[in-house]
Amino acid sequence: MKYLLLMYADESIGSNWSKEELQAAAKTWAEFRKEMSSSGVLVSSSGVAPDTSATTVRVRNDKTMITDGPFAETHEQLGGYFLVDCKDLDEAIRWAEKIPTAKYGSIEIRPLWSPGS
Amino acid sequence: MTAAEQVERIFREEHGRVLAALISQFEDFDLAEDALQDALVNALERWQSDGIPENPGAWLTTAARRRAIDRIRRTATLERSLPVLDPQLFSYDEHEMDETQIPDDRLKLMFTCCHPSLALEAQVALTLHTLGGLSTQEVARAFLVAEPTMAQRLARARKKIREAGIPYRVPPADLLPERLNALLAVIYLIFNEGYVATSGDTPIRGELCGEAIRLCRVLVHLLPAQRSAEARGLLALMLLHDSRREARLTPTGELILLEEQDRTRWDQAKIHEGITVLDEALALYDPGPYQVQAAISALHTEAATPDATDWRQIAALYDRLATMIPSVVVEVNRAVAVAMARGVSEGLQMLLRLESQAEGFYPYHAARADLLRRSNQREAAADAYRRALDLCGNRAERVYLQRRLDEIEHRVDE
Image (cartoon, rainbow over all chains, first blue to last red; front, side, top):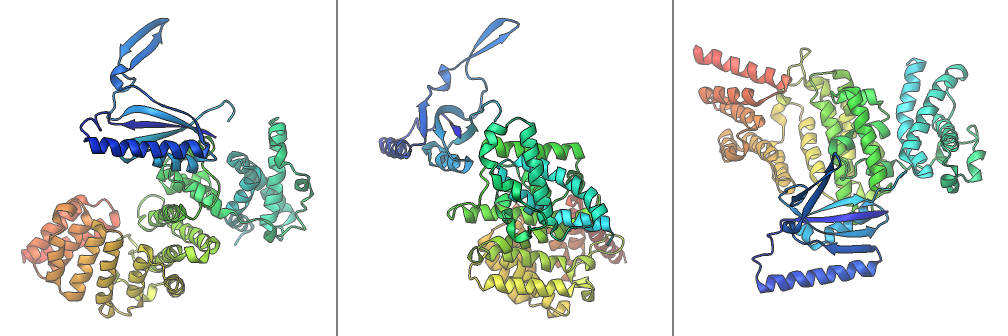
């Protein structure tokens, strides 16, 4: 089963980290990426640019409305995703809890939906 | 027992096991449930004319398997489901089969129903419905919600199990302790829902106690012995609490405190079993909060009179419990035990230190009121009873608190 692991966190976290803290975080990330890519569960992943870069599009009565900012203003913002292929929800949860941002943000797990599933 | 009641009892007892076997085989919660419902309807008709079969569980499993296969064929998903249609399926003979041939997969089903990704209320409803065999209507009545609401809650939970890929298995060793705790919490919640029920549909809610005990027995039976200490602790705790059920309310529904209960009305068979189960748990040397609470309950039941209660030991057990599951509830009970063991003033001082955390918690004020009353501080006790009454929503407890307040006010006036 494919699961999308969506990383949400307060974007401002990390902005005042010291050099040592940033280095430690980079190391943690590198180790995590290595573990995930060698496990074979990873389908794809990416970070997304900050909230300030977001644009929201809606089409109503054939009219396109474009607004600045994300769909929902929330306390924690989408920072990136991992698409993983796991045996079941428990395996997806195990990967979610290993994502470094889970320690201060939240990981939302969404199974990919397919018609008839 | 009438024939209809007998059939009903069999349905309840066999429901979880048959359903679990069907889910294992067809890997489809909804299909299993629908097939079992068909089989139950069928059984109701057949058993009335032919009598109850020797192995009702095997009968139901065979009938439900056939219904499941019929359904698969009908819904034209035959191709997708071919792997499960092994030829052996068609060769089961309900007369040759006995229970020992049905794999007991209820443990898997329990862990699926109590998966932490389901809302707690959904976990409780699913557990009662699938494992306890309670109908949607019965679960709805037990939790005081409308039947369509409960039907929706159950359907949504099953949908999530399927769509989110919640596994149907006993969790691996590293996950087991955490998941087992969640499962025990659901069983205890079902028990308490029945135990504190004093309003609404009392008979069905009281039945929840029996249902929780039955589920816990199944759990103890199926868990590896080395992992079962806390499950045994919870079973002992529920049996010991339940032994006092008849003695804890007056005919008009007023709460009777432990020290005022007629101890001859305690159920000795349940006490005996509770203590035996607790001893088995303690022998596993894997301590936990349910075992400690059961030990406290056992000390109460072992006292022939309230004065004979071993409060020192109880206070020591509350010390232990406070380190395992720190909470205001435990601290309030601990203070009361200390008051009984080492004097009211020491207990009262402990209680007062809790004030900032416990101000909005009625048992805190009720405990404070009782200790103040015992130390003859009537005005302060009356104030505390009033504060407890302001906060308490449970009818039986309110009647008790009001009676105490009336007694004190009466004496203060004199």
